[in-house]
Structure formats: C-alpha cells, structure tokens
Image 1 (cartoon, rainbow, N blue to C red):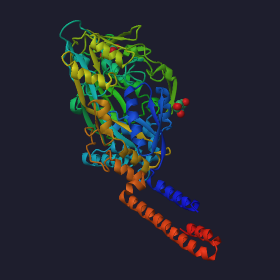
Image 2: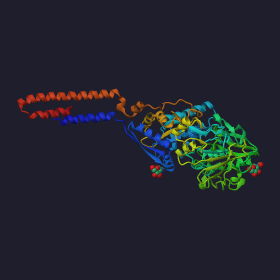
Image 3: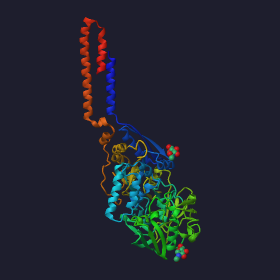
Image 4: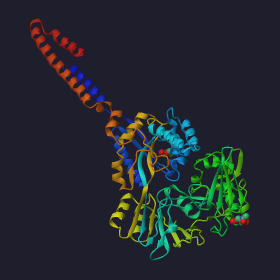
Length: 604
Ligand SMILES: *[C@@H]1O[C@H](CO)[C@@H](O)[C@H](O)[C@H]1NC(C)=O
Ligand SMILES: *[C@@H]1O[C@H](CO)[C@@H](O)[C@H](O)[C@H]1NC(C)=O
C-alpha cells in the first residue's frame, strides 16, 4: 500500500526541484592564452556565473585563433577594451562597422528599434553633427541604445602604470595607451643609456615589427610614436597640439565641406637628414589615402579617409586639405599614431617621386589591392626614418631593440642618449630585472603582474618612482548577441548582475583598475551621461531573472509548506480510511480494502 504514496512524494519532489532550480546555460568564453591577468579574471567570472547555474567552458587560444574566432563571431563571451583617448568614442564606434572588430559580430544580434544597420547610420551621422547640443544628444541616444541591449559587460577602468628607477627624472605622463614619454626623461646618475620594458599590444614586448608608419601589426604603437610624428599631437586634457603643423585654420565651404590650411613647421629634419616640407606631407597623404586603401579592409576602420576629398600644397610650408562634410573628429584623428604619420621621402620605394599607385608605401605583403575602382601595388618602405625624438638603430640578436636620440629633434635634443628596449621571457623576469638594477623603467600595462607592481609600490618605494595614470580605457566582456545562448537578452542581463566586478578587481588588480558601469569611460567626450539600467553587481536581481522559484523567496516557501501540509493531511486521512475499512472489512471480508485505498491514493 506504500508504493502510491511514494509516487506522490516523488512528484512533489520534482515540483520542488523545478521551482528552485535556476535555468541552465553553457557559454563559450574565448581568452587569449598566456595572459596571467586575463586568466585570473576569467576564473572569477566563471565561478560567479556558476552560482546561477550558468556554466562557462573557456577556450584559451593563441592570438591568431583568438582573432579568427572573435572576428567570425564564434564566441559567447570575450574580453575587449575600448581604445581610450584619443579614439573614444568616435573612432571606436566607427570601427563597429568593420568586420575586424569583435563588436561587429556581437552587434548583429541588436534588436529593433536599434539594429546594427541603424546603429551604423547613427554613428556616421553624429560624426557630421556641427551643433554641439545636438551632437551630445545624438551620442546619448547611441550610448543608451547599446547600453540597454546589454552587449558589453562593463568591467574595469584600466589605469596605466609606470615604474622608474630613482636615477631617472623628468617624467611627464603620456596622454594615451602606448604613449611613453621618453624624450622628457633625464638621468641623474650613471649611464645616459636607459633600459625600458614597455607595455606592448600583447602585454610583454616581443618585437617592434616592420616599424613602418603607414600600416598596422606587428608594428607597435609605442615605438612608432617615438620615431614618427604627424601634423598634430594629442596633448593633456584632449587638446590638439601642434606637431609638424605649427598652426591651422578651418573654413566652411559653400558645398558643405571644409578647408583646412596648415602652416608647416620649418627647419625640421628627418633622422636620415631629409627636410620636412609640404612636398613631403603631400607625398605621405598621396600614399596613405590612395583610393584602394580607404576601404574597410585597410584604413576604412575610421572615417577620416572617407572624409578627406583632396589635398595639395599652397607653398613650400603650406598644406591644404578639403573635406566632403563638416567632420568634427578630423583634427583629433590627425593626431593618431597610425596610419598617417610622416615618413622621410628617402624611404619611399623610389624616393620623393614614388608613385602611390605603382609603388605604394603599404606593406609589400599586402600585394596588389583593388578598391573604389582602382588598383595599386604595395612596395613597402626602404627603411625607418621619421622626425621623432628617437631613431631606430637595430634589433639585437637577443631580441632587444636599440634606439638612439635624434640630435636634431625640433623640440630639443633628448638628454637620454640611447634606449634599449628589453625583451623578457615572462613577468617574473621583468620583476627580477627591476630588483637587480638591470632595468631602469617599466612603462605601460601588461608588463608586471599586478601583485609585483603592488610589491614595488609598497616595499621598494625608496628605489623606484611609481605612477598610476587615470582610468582611461574600459575593459569589457563582450556578450555576443548573435550567438545562442547569449542571443537571449535576459541571459545577458543576468550575466551583467551576476559578476561581482568590485570583488574581482580587489582580489586580482591591487588598485590598478576600478569598477565601471558603462562601455566608455566617463572622461571620454560625450560619455559623461547617466545610463540606465545600471549594470551593477546585484545577485538578487540576477536570481530574480534566472531562477524564478528562489527569487520568489518566501512565496516559494509558502507554496512548499502548503504542499507538505496537503500531503500530511492526505496520508493521515488515508490512514483513518484504512482503519475504518479495516474495521468494516473484519465484518465484510477484507478483500475490498486494499483496492479502495489504491483508489484513494490515485485521487490525490
Ligand atoms: C577558433 O578556434 C579554434 C580552436 O578552438 C580553431 O581551431 C579555429 O581555427 C579558430 N577559428 C575559427 C574561425 O573558428
Ligand atoms: C622638400 O624637401 C625635399 C627633401 O625632403 C626636397 O627634395 C625638396 O626639394 C623640398 N621641396 C621644396 C619645395 O623645397
């Protein structure tokens, strides 16, 4: 007679289970291998999500595999960063239309009224907005729409660390990631050669690459920035400062575009002794902005190449440039480290008269390029020569790289005579070199482990000066809205609230970052806006969205209590019925008894 009762209890058990369980999901998290910091963050994110029944299968991938998976949208979660100044938000957002960028595939899952197409249009549109109030409003719409669709889990604001030996002085903070201001440094004692471990695009320094100014990886921003200069430079507080252009005027034209007239600096010499003048400026523009290269695969990730319609010389030191529309980021984009910094005319394949179509300065490995109805051939460059404070000398057999000062540097001869960029096998080797005195400087992120940075700051402050810049870039976790299960907005919201970023940052980063709640840093132009909902850590909210019963809280418990009471009452009632039937059965014969009890049990 107990079998039916057990059956009832079993059913109730299932009900209880269904009510209390969180939904389940399995996520594919791609992380670049060999980055200890990312690995430690991944570990914490995974355990936070596990608390809600969301399992994370992480793939640690080589840089190449990571890039191919990222750009093809083959992931649910991946770490990314905004680009910081001078790129946020305009160039970063413009790059969302480029398939090379992780957001491109993630944003395909955007829902109306702000689909990916609409977003792309809105971003192009805001870049042409002249009216400042309108422009702020339009940026707010873009930021709000992407924020609400929960594509990016805002994680931490990245601060750039610098550690300098006490024998150095004259440190002036750089204005962007990879801007390491060596030309202001002075040595107070010892050799005027300094050793530097710079933060590279992959964290630890590996190679300076081709060190040509007009292309991309494996070139490193920091080295290109020492060697080459552009018309303008990006200064403190976001001010566009003169560099190879001394001054400029901007005039509105009747057709809707603008004329920019640059007075070029005179008496500037390239490392190889060539002069800087308008012929050289025009040559560089002719090559970089040759039509086939202005497409999305090459320089089309930002809008400057699409906006600049023509350029010419109005004198030996006067360069004139026309734009199609009133494109507000133009001067800012002329400060960028690539692809429009100036190469010596002697380094073009056939010198100052090199044809941009038959022997373009683009990397020879790019081959022949067709785009916008024209075809050109990349010939690469003959060598490394810019106007910047340091000139490239050689890569040594052990992988270290030597730079010498440019004695004719127009801002004044650097006091440091030589920089040896050191290549180390790992983070521990960098720490050891600092402590044994063989390394003078660590500049940039990803070189020292956060814990080692903390040790230097707290236990070795008498030997080193330590600087930590403001949070200029946001680390985010991109949630791919175009791939199941993160195509579910509810799941993306759950993840937003489930990750305890403040605790993770505290545990892993030792003050080298701070928690953030929006995609862009608040100090980026147009980004100091309050966006709702706030994507803060909120475990209860995550539960409410993902685990209906537990989040029902006391109501859930009440339901259970009622169910248990019902069971008890039924069991007691059946006992009573059985007892009565038993008594009756004694008189009428026991046969019918069990049958009736069976019936009663099934009716519950
Ligand atoms: C993605 O990563 C895997 C390794 O997990 C690799 O085999 C594959 O080539 C990568 N590329 C793409 C497009 O998925
Ligand atoms: C500009 O400088 C180049 C060398 O860099 C020189 O060949 C050329 O003659 C100069 N042009 C003018 C107009 O002075």
